[in-house]
Length: 291
Image (tube, rainbow, N blue to C red; front, top):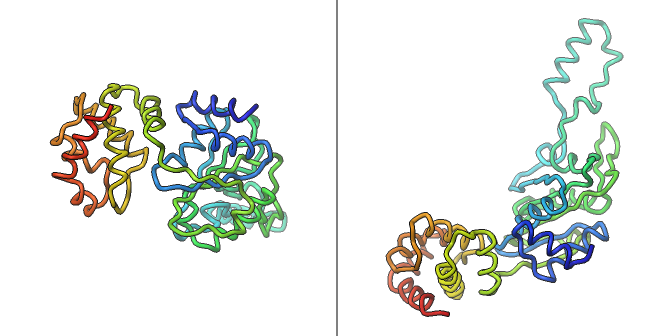
């Protein structure tokens, strides 16, 4: 496999990776190293892992990060209810001394531990999504996992992956990821696409959008990203807007429709207030006039 071959496999899953992203993903596969993808929300970081799993025919295991995420939710916990049930049965049978309460059959595997288990189809794609939403202590725990692809369980010992999973870590950069974790990963920043690339993405992911309307959508969104907004629309919003306009039966942008559907693109009231009305009309005129 080469980076170009990998890019073609991703394109078959309707993910258009530029050469630098395809190269980083290829090196991650070849070297067995995690890949850290950073970028604004909605630029396609999560979709990389989904497309990669589909392209390689691997299982996707996703850990959605959030504030307060702990080991019980991310790695493992013990099935306390089943342990108590087995303990009562052992007491009734007089076999308590033979009962091992901390064995595999009482272990509940969460995403990170599940990703270390053998898989006949090959190592899974492990997506650790939006790591920047977690607390720093959890990030520190990941150092062992991403360095050696192993997890230490006090009652069982160290669980190692027979074959390391393909690890994709994403961050919206709401806080800085620690250097120690970055050093364990290959790094790539996913930026907003330029107009030709965004038009190609729209054609691949929303082929039902008429070509002329697709051109106007992309021209409008590209210009909208030049406005001073709290949250710029990502590719995800471009795709959602395309679907929405098709659902409304539109074949061309018009100011009234754009005003009515701005909430598909913009998610903050201040941004909506800044764009609605005259600014939106001017952007529509520019987008319609663009060739």
